[in-house]
Length: 168
Image 1: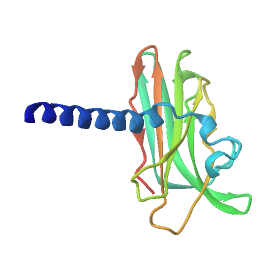
Image 2: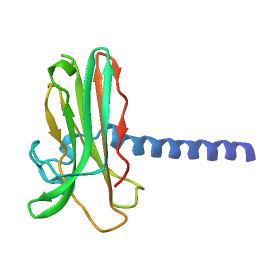
Image 3: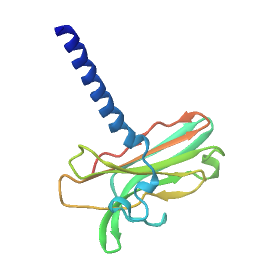
Image 4: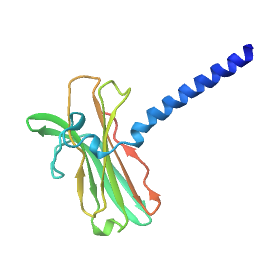
C-alpha cells in the first residue's frame, strides 16, 4: 500500500512539473510581433527608420551557405516624449544577402529582475539592405526593469543561431 501511494505521488509530481515546463516554455515558442504592436503590453510602435543611442552592445550575424550578413543592436532614445528602448536589425547589401535569407530580431523586457520577461517579436525581413525595429518600451530607473535584444539569421536550413545583447 505504501509503495502504491509513493507511485501516485511521484506520478502526480511528474505531471505537475511537466505541465509547468510546458506552460513556461509555450509563451516563448508562441511569441509574436502582435504581442507588442498596436500598444500591446505597454509597447509603442516606431518607424523602422528611428535611430537612437546604442546601448548594451551590438552583434553581427553571418551564415555562409548561402551567404548572408546582418547586424543587430539595442538603441534608446526619445519616443513621443518618453525615454524608450528598442531593438534594430540591419541586413547586408545585395552582395551580402542571399535570395533565401531571413533575418529576425526581437526584444525581451523584464520588470522583475529577469525572473520572467515579455518577448516583443520576432520581426522578420527577407530583404537585402533593410533595417527593421522592434516596438519600443519605456526605460526606467528601477533596477528590476531590463532589456536585451536577440537576433537570428537563417536560410535553407542554415542558421546563425540565436545571439543576444547583454541585459541592460
